Length: 140
Image 1 (cartoon, rainbow, N blue to C red):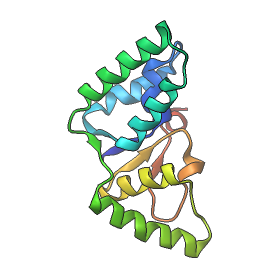
Image 2: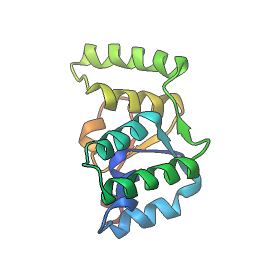
Image 3: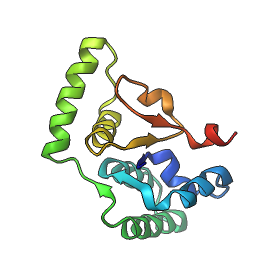
């Protein structure tokens, strides 16, 4: 099984007090973990909101190392994902369950690559046809 890891889990290693359950899950599943270029963008946006200083520089360095470590496993929003996204948007609109655009891009990327979305925020992704998993709840 492959996982598309959302921002909330991928950023765990950068926290001062990371959740050991998340760190263990990330380590145990490292060979099957992917993420989306949108997740990288969300991480960069959060870092860019910080004032200049030591914390921001440390997080920028962490993000650079993360991108290097995930080489080949950061999935882009390309034409094939865009087609999945368009069909997904229409499906969700018909069912009255639209989702915010960044989440819908991440969901379409997971769908296109047949990955399960790994996140603590499962309610953000609970829509027909999406596979969602919360490793924290699974280990509780």
